[in-house]
Image (cartoon, rainbow over all chains, first blue to last red; front, top):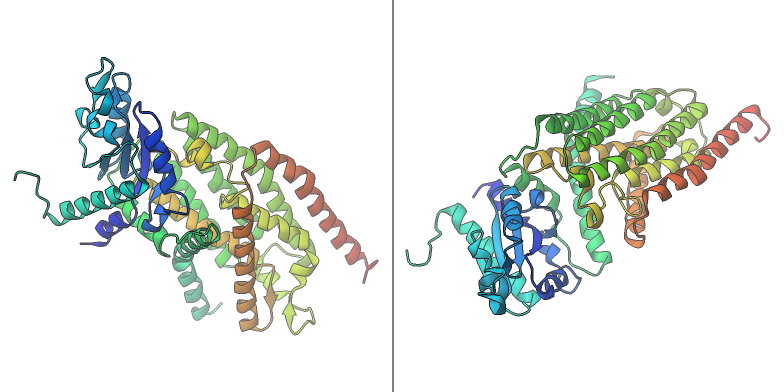
Length: 150
Length: 300
């Protein structure tokens, strides 16, 4: 693992995107930034700008109106990037699944690396999810990553 | 200037970004401790830099990048002049030019955040750069020269061989230099043009990957230069007193900036302009008047 690959694991900058959820998970994400959870100790910064971002934290079910916005944000994020679906709605659509104005989970629109279920998600679970995503990135860099079923 | 002297200056130039990087590392760590957090590792800015260098390049347009490189080049030019004991006024101009390039770069893309950031950046320059220039002029009035080599040579103050003359006779100019340092390093209450929670990161919003890393590199150079400017206010005949004094002075200013950063909220841009006109400008004029009076021999 060279210096750049090591640095990637030590400096994941996040952007959180609400695709039409109830705002519950967003508040939990912001709770991670407080002194109690202090995610900055892992080098995580909340950037709010896709062009500076490594990790996209997506909350809420994807509404039909938001579909192209989410795609646009995903495409603006430079590689390598990680997408984390935060909350039950983002994982599968949750209680909004099959609603006439909802596409479903985030994975219906963009590829998702880590799913964090919960309504609303606990801050501990979000930190766990980001760490899991970094582990996946590490394995991808080492070439030891295996998809489920392989 | 002998060979060893030149080697030390070149080394300082090469190590300038290292100091800048460490400054931001210590800054983030101490900020976290002040907020009762653990905070990132000391080398966090370096990890950020390496990571950004390894990301894919996404270019908005080419002129945007040219301006980013021009910003870094002019900051490096200003630092080069500073380390070769050049002209203080030229250093101010080169620094100002670098900042103009940063604003032009922000104007060359279509993002409204970038434009708001650039407008604020220009206003911030209008508020602070003239004061920095006036601070250089007060130094000239006191020492008779803009050249740093002459300023350093002016050590005749009989206080244990320490030429604290600049710090003691130019307290208000020193205040202005600290103000400029706060503004240019984008610290609260004057982190107006890159206001993170408000306009994302203003002037830097469209830079991504390696190009964002380049602007960060420029920022590290700029920081070293600004702290160099602060250290001009302390000189001595004895080399080790001079160096120790400069380091201690820089460190005190660093801590003061950090405390101010953590204890204040961001002001609006017009408050900065008003601050510089109502407080900065009168203070520097008082300083100039004091120098003129004392040079006429009215006050011993």
